[in-house]
Image 1: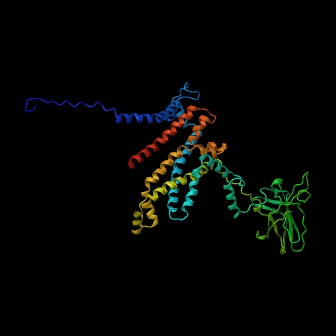
Image 2: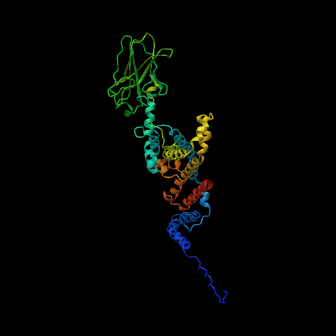
Image 3: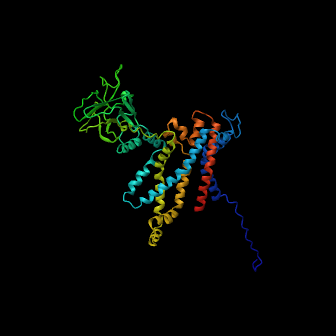
Amino acid sequence: MSSSGSITAEPPVLEAPPNAGPGARSYTNALVFLAPAAFFLGVWVLYPMIYTVARSFFGRTGFGEFVGIDNYKALFENDVILKSIENSAIWVAIVPAIITALGLIFAVLTERVRWSVAFKTVVFMPMAISLFATGVIWHVMYLKDPSQGAINATIGGVRSAFVSSGPIQDAQPSSPAIVGSTSKGFSLKTPVHPGQVALIGLTGIPPDDLPASAKQAVAPTATGSEIDGVVWRDFSPGGGTPGKVEPQELGIPGATVALKDTSGKTVQSTKTGDDGAFTFKDVAAGSYTTTVAPSTFSSAFGGVSWLGSKLITPSIIIAYIWVWAGFAMVVIGAGLAAMPRDVLEAARTDGATEWQVFRRVTVPLLAPVLSVVFITMLINVLKVFDIVVSIAPGSTQSDASVIAVQMWRQSFGGVNDFGLGSAIAVFLFILVIPVLMLNVRRFRREV
């Protein structure tokens, strides 16, 4: 009110309408962008998960056959499924720890070498191919025949440097004049003297087992201070006389023959020629025994059965470690590169050895990175599938099977029991939940 008596009134401030501006629009935009992801998440993850859980309570024929928890009981009553659970337990107990340890060792050791980049490239390279392709490669490498499998070819090459194989694998005496066996050797019953001939006929030898260089056996003649003889395959097509060298009877090349005195001491030793003949020269007067040594019958290296029922699981584990060791090395190497060096130098300055620095400084500082690698590998080995299918042959598929493989075999591998397959899938999901919770807890702790 002014002094002149006039009244001046200001209009009241109008309240603003509810805010429907930027905040609401942001919420709407978020829903628009999340809707496609939510839709596909529901179609590809949520719906299959719910359907699988529901299907696990029904039988082979479908939802018309409610069986309750019978499928879950079958998990612990079926020998093949129990074997798969046992194998998965072996994978969980061994593989993550080995891969993490190898990654740590590779990362630490290659930190100080000039060729570390080349080494890391080679170790990480298997990650560039799929696990199925890796399985095919290792399946070929594991073949038992040394002429086909690279692993057995390598073992055979090393073995041949220390152990020599004989020209034949099996034999039997062709006449009563010869005694012995392949493990002890074959000897003539009657001692021989210088100037005499030793005829050692063997039978029970398949023609294909003789060396390709074998020639027609010839009965030798001995003179003077020599003892001559022949070792041959004493078998003539259509018959023949045992103990007599006849046409079409081949000598045994490369057989080791020992000349022993009356005390059993080896005086001389020699190998037979392509016609099976052998000669001992300058033999002193006396009685001697001629023996075909057991080394003549030592079989060649036939290969280790890596794909057999006993070794199939360790073989697959080795191939899997070969693939994932590079991943662990790179991740741990990145953590090692980010580690403060002043802490390591301080430990060395205080007199700590390299082993003490590694054990009490490096490993504790790398614990978060090591836990990432370990938990990642735990999840991976629980759902391992393709490398098992591609390495294990059909004859040992059940011996190498793990939970994921058994789930596929029960559902799609010819059994077509989707109820039991769904129960296995739910069981696998339950096993993964503790690992996922551990991972989530680690994330929260780091945040």
